[in-house]
Image 1 (tube, each protein chain N blue to C red):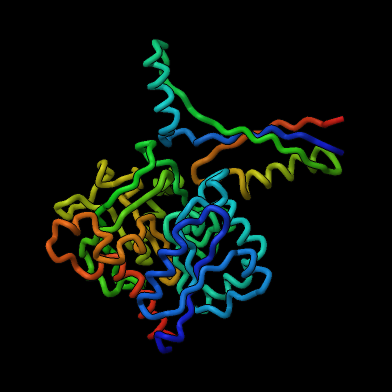
Image 2 (cartoon, rainbow over the protein chains, first blue to last red; image 1 turned 135 degrees about the horizontal axis):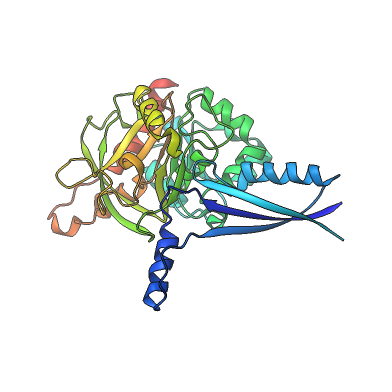
Length: 83
Length: 272
């Protein structure tokens, strides 16, 4: 079965996000009353797996082994089956 | 081991860019230094032929995902067994800048209980959110566990340049104090950023260029032979690389970076 996982990786709360702060400052400069910005990365992973559970297990493993550094990153993902 | 017999392997991949000056500096010390692509070392199984391994600075694989992580996973997938044997035999493994990022992503540093399957620390985006490329002051805080800084007196201040966008050393927030204590216990702290008066930067910019926790610029493994640092010793090797050399009248022949590279060579001479 073919799946597509959308993985969101973001900096854990409590760590400063310099990219987000810079972006917030720029948005304020444009006149928006922005109180904060946090930046995330999105990966769209296409994969094959025996089942949905298997796909979830694999994507979770990918997140822990490569897509995130557990010291500073949080992640979540959505999986959908592809036709 | 005689100095002329020592072979230094400087690994490269697409995007490394400090390999050649690192090789030049090592050759000046009278050892053989080769720059070899990581794929070739994997294919030929040639890591055991060398005495020193250097992961040089640069932007391996475009710094995609996180700096150093793609290269780290290449090493994990294809070179790990040879690398772990190399480390266990006591050979020096040095990661400079991008190489430090690799050693952290690979779980070799801090490596409290040997290599960790997942990183125990991170080198995050600089707090300033800009690429910091300039000279910094560092204090050697190691008490003797790291054999490569033994020729630098304890508490001495040295100067080397940094050049990175992701150098903010972090521990997981919930383990910060405990991990720091472990670094002290096992004498793994090596270099910390300081102010011009020699006191620790205490996170203050620009003396601490990236916002690193505890002003950490370089750490070693509990055994001392794996060493990673953000500053570039190879860019502070010759006297004419110093930022103020034209003002000095007669610049010194060598800069402080030489002390570290020579410390590596002297360690191999003594140990093997």
